Amino acid sequence: MMADESAQARDERTPLEAQLPPEIVATPADVRARPDEPLTWWTPGWRDMIGHVGYRWIFLIPALALILGLVAVLFIPGLGPAIFVVGFKLLVFAGAVAISLAGYVIRCAARARREPFCIHCGYNLTGLPDNYRCPECGRPYTWRLIAEYRRDPHWFRERYKAQQKLPAADAAFPAGPVAGKRRRRDGT
Image 1 (cartoon, rainbow, N blue to C red):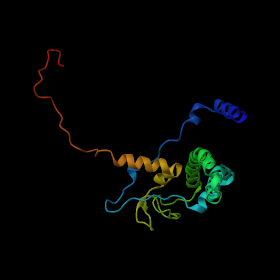
Image 2 (tube, one colour):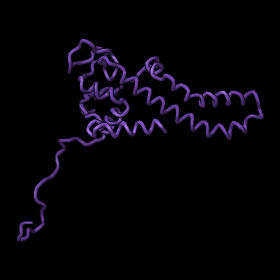
Image 3 (cartoon, one colour):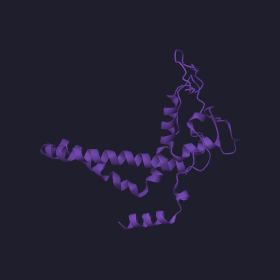
Image 4 (tube, rainbow, N blue to C red):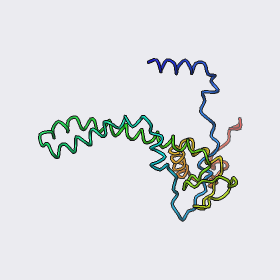
């Protein structure tokens, strides 16, 4: 309760301009993919993610308890109905917590990486110029694109998928007056 009140008081003191989300500096439309090969995205490895879990590993205790309960059912036959009743609710809760924790950790690990990196293969691009090609995978990159991907990798990938479904911007369409309509005196 106190944390909510202090966060609310902090939000009231900060000006509205400071509370706005950061501006978008690049879009997934800037990603130029080769049509002959599938596009891959870099995600943090296990070592990176474990470093950002911290105290949050406590939230995985219900999932561990469920796994131990399922193993116990194999050795204690009368425990099956009790684990089934409690286990289903625990399974849903533990799954939701584990998925949300994984998403949070992936975002934190991508933000924590300070050196420039290829958003496709994760190669360290320190010392290379802007608007160039990655020496590891050969795909083009820009610093703006890397900064946008670093903010939220999952959202960036989803925007890229949605952008791929859009029709071509320069598709021709028929324009001009509609045939068969008579103009009125007032010009409409």
